[in-house]
Image (cartoon, rainbow, N blue to C red):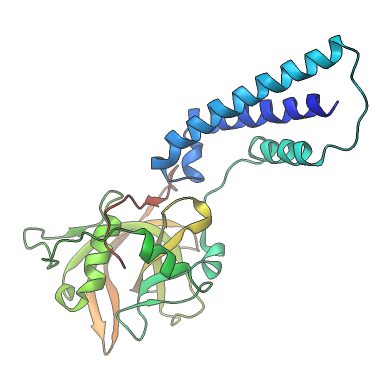
Length: 261
């Protein structure tokens, strides 16, 4: 009986992984560069499933099927595999920010970790790349510094390394709105989650915005503004804000070769 439960758990786990990969929902759990490894794991799970079926079949043919003891591990795998099918996968939002390390403009230093468990920012530092060009000056040929999904982390790191060189520079980016308890009441964050490996190590990157937010937390916006400084604090001075629909995949992914933050 245990072999049958094991086979059922492996089948359901393989089916769940296949569905997540086929629908690209796997990207809500993993950095896409690890999806090939997930596919290899899927093949291995299918092989184990076939072997479990063969084992169960041989026991049936030889009349060696017994009620057996409680199969704890297979049942846990079974329940774990069921969860993505029962509960629709959700991306991380503002409620998780206090549990994550967060890099943002707006603290007593040009770039500070506002809040999060010890070690999270350091983990992100070690995981992002180490090959930022020596010339990290603002892109002089860009009238507006546009942060997109493909360049957000790199340009964020450039601004972090040389913040004074970017004061007065106009910037445009998309992200979700957050009212962080450690920030002044007249400021909010426009933030993004960056994933190195999986959602468990997601790091929040954000810019402080000097503005009275017209939208609630987790609202996605497209913001254009200028990087400004007030004494030691850096922030974005809003030029325009546009509300956006929540993207199907809201994460940034840190590939190898990015600069340390």
